[in-house]
Image (cartoon, rainbow, N blue to C red):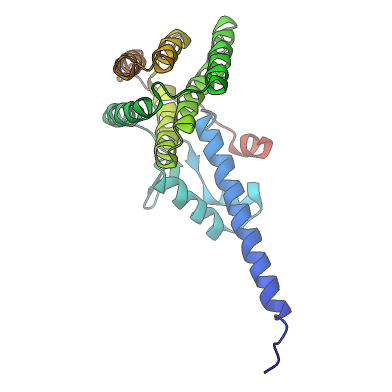
Length: 242
């Protein structure tokens, strides 16, 4: 039997479905990046109609993206209230740090004594960038670089599952910092990162783990879990710029 050519309508539908999926990913990435960068404060309402207008898509597609963000723990969806950026409670904050300790200990044990020269040089350069941000008192950049340092360790460990879990925890921790960090106190220290890096390079897993535990405890101690902050946000201006 002769083969028939693919139906043009079917091909068009397949292409449209792919384009739709890619667009949904782009919307997800924009909102996710805004949350990770602390530009969308915890508790910010994410109204479906407003997002539909910003991105020029249907409300059904907006709802699908919000559901994905909720699954990642970055958005809360409540009946009759809609979606909002996850607002961590003090208990949430402590649980996030507890989970990070377990994941980062595993990453450090994978890395200790196995750093190649190029990876160590890249991490040293990263710590230097953190020091420069601290010198110019750029708190937002310090927070961003701090999270990236930990993610770089996870990337070098070459364990995709650990990297994925840590990425989401660090994004959620950014919301914790935004709500509870004491004014004028950076959440992370490049000095502590340098010590951790030196222990990894020396192959001293036990010391690296102990330093990381102390490091995360220091970050937690810089938080005031009885304090909350709120600020207004122009959702359209922020996401359109991205």
